[in-house]
Amino acid sequence: MGVQERRERERAAQKGAVLDAAREILLEKGFRGTTTKGIAERCELSEATLFFYFSNKDEILVSLLFESIRFWAEGLDKIAKSGAGPEKKLDQIWRFHEKVNEEHPEYYLVSSYLAQPNVLEGVSEEVKEKIVQQSGENFQRLASLLEESTGHSDGRHMADAMWAIFLGLMVLRESRKNLGHGEVRSTKKDRATAFKWLKNGLQNKT
View 1 (tube, rainbow, N blue to C red):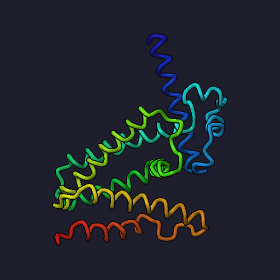
View 2 (spheres, rainbow, N blue to C red; view 1 turned 45 degrees about the vertical axis):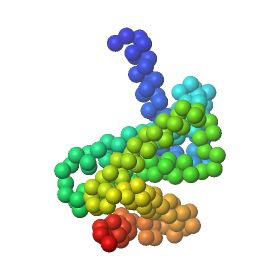
View 3 (cartoon, helix red, strand yellow; view 1 turned 30 degrees about the vertical axis):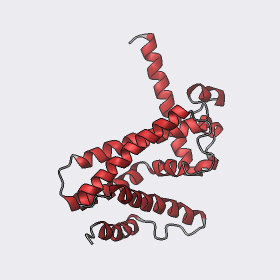
């Protein structure tokens, strides 16, 4: 291994460590509590060294966002190739939402981050365009799967509804935690009930 290759691997490993620290703090403290100083301390780096890898907090969160986009793309493509029947495929789509929540709950937090005021001010227009393009491709993946699974042609509105319901339930869970209500109506079983209502509507042919 050459010197340049070793340096690139070391840099990639350190960036990975920074992202791991960021996801941990994001889940523990939310957006306001996630700071470059805290991330650096978790990685046992100086804040100045962290800025060698990422310019600011927005860039770190955007890196997690792109990671999320790739994860969704791979999962939705796998469902598309599964060969399952329409109803089973519809169930697979919802289960994949649950899989994301179980394995990477920070991805839903990062998605809700985009709704914050003045978000991504520290991110270039080029990167913003890439987010729009890649997230749009995932949206189309979901819309196409829903059209195939339900027989309806309006996949875009169905995709909006499914995504909004699951993301909304995640936000509602955090809101209830912050209000001291614990896990009231925020378990996997509760979300399955919400999906049952959604599924009935999606399969309605009238």
